[in-house]
Image 1: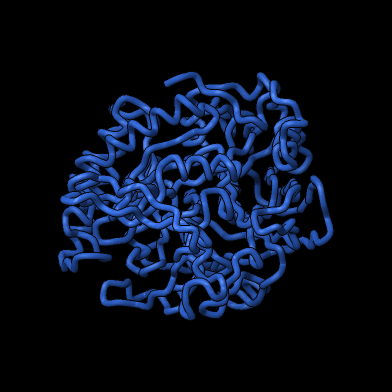
Image 2 (image 1 turned 60 degrees about the horizontal axis):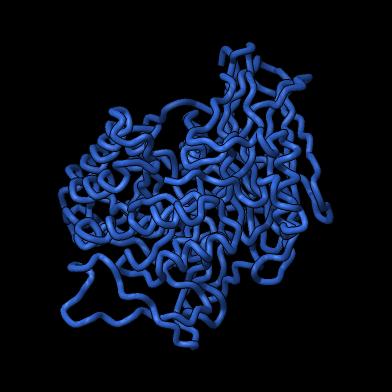
Length: 556
């Protein structure tokens, strides 16, 4: 692979006059972090962070730059998608993505032909556009459950890993998936999913690949990812199975007048089935402010997992198959050809007439921001694993930096995904530095953040009931009204440690649609809402979410 190049906004050789407003803003964030120029080095691995606890309780995290990406993108190498590899990569570059994962659907045509064909395109793209970090991945049909993104670091075996995994562990290929073929041997199938994740971990340990990560996709869309299954995947190899989509793709599914009177953002239009986990309420099958119920519910499933004291990262992405307001259609097959014997769809054809679609281009609406100390594929993977992640819709923010510090600490503090160790009753400061949007998004809106919510939950350790989805001690503890604030500003929020360890996470929105959260006003007084079927304009209801920071109270 040819030598990488810094992204334009990070490259000191590129004049500020050649950057748009958001590029200038991102360069400013890099300068303030002390990483501009040579300090933001090119490299294949993230620079190691200072060891937490190395200077007594607390420790420090590094200064970070945030790379914007999408881990769930499909091309003609998926049987149900439409666009060429180059169309997706070009769109991602147009919307400012630094990294992206092509995670094509598993099937025999993909394993036999498509994965290798796409790999050749990925290698070519890495040579021709070294400023864009492109990963090859697979959308795994989890035995007994839904889908996951699986992707590896670039290297000699990145494609072999995916195809070996696909043939040995994919639920669709084996007939073990709940979403397709009915299979009653649930215990066997769930065990096979755990075995699959352990196998990936072994490939990393053995050095067969440098790195590999797994993230659960649209977890509550069908209600077939039970809480105990998600916990089992995490526990099988927490360094590999690192999290889930907090918000699914297909965010344009309910644009009024486009797709139908029953459409819901994310294509969350299902109801409980015989294969669903019976403990989910019917409301779990909807999105709230575009976010999955498991994430959007304060005190819900995501918080229940965090309350065990273990990181589980959330992301967002496009899941792009068919873009809203697009005019391309699938091309026609040549005689005798199909996906099973080619592994690739025919190139699409432009009709000049709007076609059906639910998705946005990569980076157009949904963005996952990953904190790194260097630039490169492995740096992105290290940042995801560390939980240095926040996400936004509609380009709501240019930047977010979160630091939790012991009172009087003048260091960098602990950031997203990190752990701060304190004593009972100790005072802490949560510094939240916001950089407001500096340019209009693709809808022509200049987004404005209206509020920042601080969510706090007690950490009680592993749960006895692995199917619990409640965290009864998690709630919104503070809301900062930031209406009218522009540029870069810092909120300094005092926190006092009690007797128990805890975590804090952040959330905020444009303020257009808020109401009582799913578990009541005492838990979440102005949370995200679902929308009327067929009437869910995503641009009018945008949110950001951050991953947590943990606080370990000594002696608790």
